[in-house]
Structure formats: C-alpha cells, structure tokens
Length: 486
Image (cartoon, rainbow, N blue to C red; front, side, top):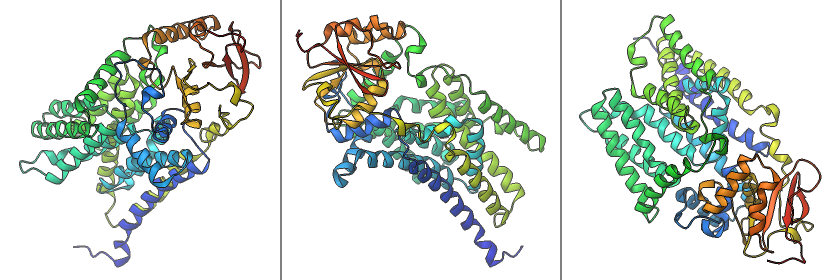
C-alpha cells in the first residue's frame, strides 16, 4: 500500500475549502455591486413586509383563495419580524441563501467536489442564463436544489434494505419545496424517469417520498386540498387565456433548445467515447433521462428545462467529471487543489464580471415612491387601483411601497386577474401597447385610481380623458382630472 504523507492528507480539505470559498465569494461579490433582481424576488420581499393577503394587494378573481408561495413568504416574514431588517436586507438574504443552497448541495454530495466547480464553469460558458437564474432570489431555486440532490442520491433507493436517512432527506426536501414553491405535481417527472430506466425499486421508494413530502408540505399551508388544487387549476388556466405565445412571460414561452448547452452535452458524450470509456449507462440512467425530459418539455415551456432539466444535466456532468478525475487523479493528490483553484478562479471571474451591466443595471432604476414629495399627490388614494399593462410597474412599486393602501390590477400572474381586466390586458398586448387599447381601463377608473404606463418619449401618453405626471424615468402616472368625477 502506498504511504500517504501527512502533507498530502490535507489536500482533500484544501480542495473542499477552495470549492466552498468559490461559491461563497461569488454570492458576496454579486451582492457587493448592489444587485437586485428585477422580477418576483421584489414581490416576495414586499409581500412578507406588507403582512397582507393577496386580495388586499391585487384585484384578483374570487376563486383565487390562497397564496401561491406560502412557505417562502412565511420564512421571509419571520425573518423580518425577528430582525426588523430592511427590504434590501431581505433581498440580500433571498439571493445569497438560495444561491448557496443550490451550489453547496452540488459540493457535498460528490466525493470529488472540484467536479462541481468544473461543472459550474462549463455551464457558465455554455448557458450563462442558467447560472444567472440562481441569483434571482426566488423559491424555485429550492426546487432546483431538490432535483439536484435527487440526481446524486437516487442510487441509494435501489437497495433492498431501505436507506432511511436518504428517504427522510428526500421526503423533507420535497415537503419544503411543496411549501415554499408549490409545483408539487412536477415531482412525478423524476419518478417516471426512474421507471423509464427500469429502476423499479428506486422508483417506488422515490414515489413514496414524493407522495409523503407533498402531503406534509401541503399540510403546512393549513388548507392542503385547496392549495394543491389551486396549483393545478392555475397551471391549466394559465395556458388557456392567451391568443399568442408572446403574451406569456418569457419563462413560460418555448425555449430555443439552448443549442450551446445541447452541444456541451454532446461534447461530454464524445469526450467519454474518445477516451475509450464508453458505457451505455452513461445515457441509460434516470438522471440523463430527467435532463433530456426537461429539455424536451422546455421546447414547450422553458421553465421545464430551466428548473428541472438543467439541475439534472449539471448533476450528470459533475458525475462525468468525477468519474474522469477518480481514474486520473489520486484522492490525496495536490493536483486536485490545482484543479479546484484554477476552475474556481475562472468561474468566479466569469460569473461576477459586470458584463453589459448585468449586476449594476438595477442601480439606474427610478422607482415610484411615497418618499418623493413631488409624486405623492399623484399616487393612488386609499382604496385606489393601479392599472398597468407592465408587471415591472407592480414589482418595483410594490417593493418600494409594501404597506400602501392601494391595489394593482396586474401583479405577478396575469391569470389571477378578473376576466374583464384580463380581456383588456390581452387586447393591449395584442395591439402591442397601442394607447387606444387602454380605453377599457380608463372607462373603469375612479378618482382614487391611477393608470401607470411606460413611455420612452418625454411627453405624456396620448390616452384621452386623463391628466399626466412624469413620475419616474420613462414612467407616467395618469389620473382623472380633478374637476371630473365618476
């Protein structure tokens, strides 16, 4: 047996330390820019601070009875009450905690953690949007982490003797994911992939974890049947209320097949074949199937690929790199530290570079806020409604005014809107924002209501019947003239 020197014994510790520091420094560097995501993370934070139910924030259909992310809002609200922190502090927590949960999961379920850093580097080069989505501070990242961990531990479900720690872990992860995110029915996809790979025992064990986890997670909402049913109905309703695909938010539109990521997977397969290590199990396994299922489903709905396919593909790639490193580099070799250091530095510089202002563009955001005295007279009055066709108006204004006494006709989900308001919105979208198409909302407006629209020209929108105030960059607030009432 080859003797291992005392110096070499610390090499694995150096490797894991370098890997952990890499993902930690990435998150801290991104935050140091003052970065704030531009979409749902804003409303999650504002919802937690507001302490209000959605029907006090949005004008919604009567059959929408529950919060769509009760667990995540409960976590943020508890943190807010315990620390009395600011909205920006809650945002920092959202970004850093979820990013680290995903990235650390990739490290600690591998025997060669440097394989994960190399994977992050490869994916950052081929599909940067996949890494960027890990910084958006939204609870789907916890679901992605659950998919990632499943991809690493599913072989433990094969044994006749049940691996209870792994079963309990998987059940807890699915329960938390159901509670904080809610797409419980998508956990059928990994189970189908297990059965497709003829991993019958593992499929049954995972199925039991999924069913138990969903029930437990839904029970924490207090109304499990209503919660689970609303998630299904919302999904069905969401794809039956638009005329053309462009009316959907980008992540619900079809993907372009992410050709560079597809090329990366093919290159990985070619690399294995060229080094004489081809094995049909490279592709005939549940993790590869899950990645491909996510990619195919993504051709219809992009999020299927982003949230389910990408984590599986990343796990598959990490296992491929691990297999190579295991065969070519000794466990106690200092070469491992060199790989971790080089790949860690490369991925840090690649991800954190402010290319195109991706981390600082938000610093130029000009928000509508009650702290601006010139804008205060133009803000909606008590019990007023904000009419707008732009979700960004909702995200930014709600974030800066979480305790305001008005509601928004359009929030984070168009299909939550009342049918008549949704019809007006779809007409605006169909006519690509033509001002005449806003007339339906103008006719509904009361003195306390406001219409807020974007107009890149420094002149008021030509929407009849309203007077206008330039409230923020390219943003106009319209109200009924003071001498007119309805």
